[in-house]
Length: 259
Image (cartoon, rainbow, N blue to C red):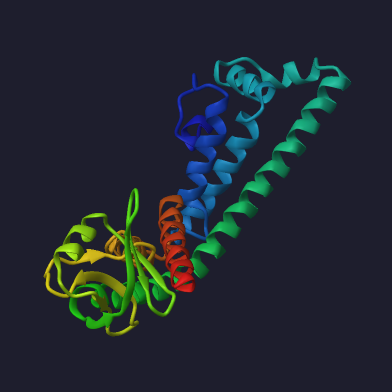
């Protein structure tokens, strides 16, 4: 098989495209990913092609060979310094190829662990979503003072606590005759979610909680965790999905710790 065909590139492809094409073929035919018996023999051809085409000198010699020039004659006419350089380049390419394969195996192993972690993230997203839409408890919050800030309304409790919400809440509170407010908590995790004046039905989300952005982070975890859980085979896209859901999970943990 032609080396260019093995890497699925044109013979006129720029030198910088060789490495990218090699990475792409490794992700398709590496034996750890592709169980097809023919993938192992194809991987040998891919490695040979990369070893030859990744160096401009050996690639030029290979192009001469394809064009019908007797390459053995050309090699015999090279100086010892040129042969030493060619050997040095081949060794460097082998080390580079080994390093790329090790990185690939590390990513694949990390993806397996990340997949198990995303199963936990998926369960947490289900609990948070159920808590957000279908369950809640309301409690009266004894207020000491309600202050209209530049961007938020601050509600100071008699026990020294402070919560913040939208500026529009201040108008509803001032039109209400009751001094206290009602806070809506989720029933499973007992997290503060919304606040309203006692004599008003309009609810406002409490700032600084995991629900400040509604249920967006749980939905993100839910979607991207499904992508990871449903696919055992590693790809860069699936790894990115798993990392994104992990970052959303970390945000939720930090917000829960600050409550």
